[in-house]
Length: 314
Image 1 (cartoon, rainbow, N blue to C red):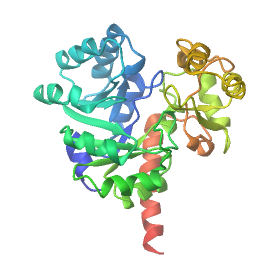
Image 2 (tube, rainbow, N blue to C red; image 1 turned 135 degrees about the vertical axis):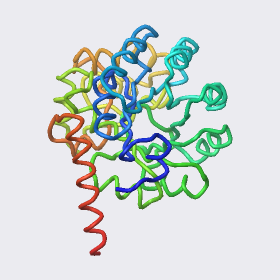
Image 3 (tube, rainbow, N blue to C red; image 1 turned 120 degrees about the horizontal axis):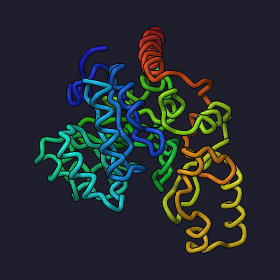
C-alpha cells in the first residue's frame, strides 16, 4: 500500500489509527499498534495526569514509532493533560467531545498535529474552520460516546468528504480490511479502528469484557442515554436498568443518578459485567477472537489487499 495523506501526515506505514478508547487504550496497545505500522493512541479520557505521564514514559520505551494521545475536551483537568503533552514532546493529539477552537491553536503552536473527532457534517466544517490538520468522522455504529444524529458511516463519510478539503479518517463499524477499503472508496484517507483493538491481547480493559466482545452477536448493542451523552453499550443488567427507568418516565436527573460515577470503569476495566457500562461498537458481532494488535493490523492490510483485488474483478 503506497503513501497517502494520512500516512504522510503521521509518518506511519499503514493508514490505520487505533481508537483512543477509555479504559482500553494504554501504552501496551498504543505501542503495539505503532510498532505494527499504524498509529497507536493513548486514551487519556480515563487517566489522571500522573497516569498519563506514566503511560507516555512506557510507550516511549516500547516504541520508537509515532504515537499520539486522545483527549476528550470534557475532561475536568484538561490544562494539566495539555501541559504534560507539550512537556513530553507528543507530536499528535486527537481531540473529541468539545469545541475544536479551544485547544487547536495552542497545540499547533507547540508543533503538534491536531485531529478532531466529529459525528456530523456541521461539526466537520467547524473543525476545519478551527484549523485542525485532519478529521475523524465517526458513524453511528461506533462504540462508546457517539453522535445524536444517528448518521451511519456509509452516509457520513461521503457527506463529510463533499464539504471538507483536509485529510479524512473514517470510524465506526470498521473491523475488517473490506470495511477499510469501503471507507476509503467512499472518500476517507484512512480509518480509525476501535472495537477490533478493544478485543486485543494488549488492550488494558478486563479480560471478561474482551470475552463479552467476542461473544456479542448482531443486535447485542444499543445507543442509549441520549439525554446525557449518547453511548453505545452491550446489553447487560445496567443497560436493562436504564431501559426500565425510561419506561417509568425517568427525568434527566434520574438518569444521572442511575449512571452515577465510574460506571464505565466498573464494566470495562474492573470486569463487572452486570453493573458496569460495556462500551463497544455494532461491529462486535464480527469479532470472533482476541488477538495480538500486530496480528489485527496485519489482518486488516491483508484483507484490504484481497478486497481490492475482488473489487477489481467486479
